[in-house]
Image (cartoon, rainbow, N blue to C red; front, side):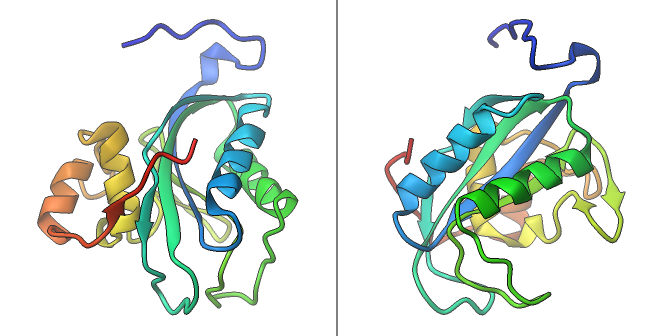
Length: 180
């Protein structure tokens, strides 16, 4: 395990290990991922620790066009969950994501979702952590397993690897070259 260097951008007393999902199915997908990671890495209060391989999968949940590249990001943050959510939404807007009507799924230049924030469980109008339906989504579980197969879901009390085995194996998602 690598040492974490003290950074002027992070308050070491309030750091949370956090996992984000990242995805894109519009435009230059690898460039979209790279740009989002670059913007995240420049945010005060965020330190990127690990990025999964990117996985190619067909559109799901009613989206009709373009394959997706999906991955996961492990980071340390001193931001609160709502600050992190606002940061993710701001990055999405900077990269050209158009926010659709509530509940309508659309193609997207970039999608950043907070999957886990430490071991916290949050269920508010603005934010649900852990992210909904993680256990039913290959495009979330497979990248998470690439980073930390032993990560425990704080509600279901199972590791990411166990969730995959219990709910989803086998899969049709193909491993793509790492995007960045």
